[in-house]
Amino acid sequence: MDAKFQPVPRPNSNQNSLGIDEWKLLEELCEGDSMQLELMTKLLDTERQYQLASNHSGILKDLKRVFDTSSRDKETAIQAAHRDRDLKQAVEAGNVEAVKQATKKSSARVSEAPSDWAAMKFKARQNEGVGE
Image: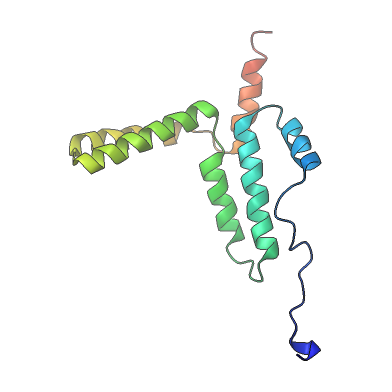
């Protein structure tokens, strides 16, 4: 095979994940906050996927999707999971009234949500210091 037809390896294409030291550092930086660790992990994975791709279009949309799905506190994430489960069960059972209730609760919670991840994170830290 002629040299001009051989594929050129991409830099870092063999790196699928963070090493042990990087994971420890990331966990330390997240200060035991499992939701923040999940967010950081998903952001790094999204970035890695686009770093290895030849086409980078869509990265901003995918990063926004990561923030939308992972940038909430633990309680809110659990409530959202319960709501999604209840909604799915109501749809499967054909219970229209339960579906309406679940969607009303969903829209009310959206308006109460912090505007961004930083607002949520720093509000949580401020609340921790209130009783001190």
